[in-house]
Image 1 (cartoon, rainbow, N blue to C red):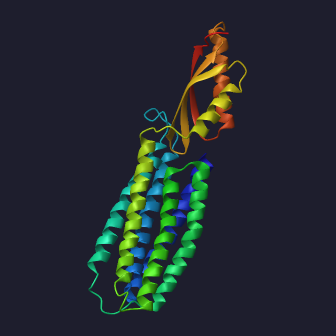
Image 2: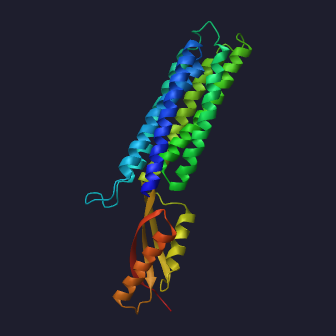
Image 3: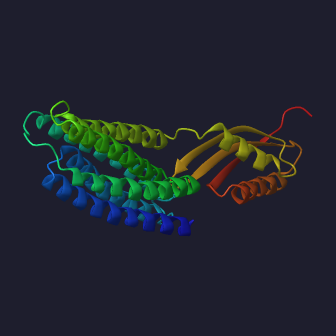
Length: 292
């Protein structure tokens, strides 16, 4: 699990560096080319630097081992950084919308055509970065890394929107005079929408929302694979960082001794953790089975 945290942190640092370079490039190019859409996309990339920094911080703290004050570990901090990232994206999107809308009707000259290459470069680079974060984020179940990957994916979408907006303005500067500014508004709306979505998803995890049924069925199957485990009455799971903590009620033969029941419970715990690497710890409550 420490290797997963280390790789995820390196990926977050890579995202910070790439987003920083793209932000500087697009803001400078957009300013000189007088393109609101390109500048808006640049500020969106600048927000990515902050969000990737939060992901790195969250993963760093989440990787700390459990202690007396945090018996479940520090994994929740990773989810908390995802929530903060959603808030930053929502605020950034709103600011981009307001700034772009305020510029409608103020510019007399259309943007320069050479501003388009900065958007094309950003789309290509962000496509690779988004794929890496989403792929590895799903693999290790990192809420913050998945949120950052979704953010990069939205960068691709916002890049295409900005590309279309600038292209329309260049194709007919009179008819589509405000397309570039409206493209900036659209970019802001996309970013804000993503922020709200990230807030919802990470908030549900902080509220101990149960995982999908497939994960619960996998836990039950692993428990019942142990000889002597007759049934799983209740099964609860909550996410703390990259892994889950599981509580389950295990039915065993009522005629077994306490020692024998304890041995079965220990075997169930070991089986679940061995078969399901995304489970960090298991608390087994042993109960007598009813009937034959």
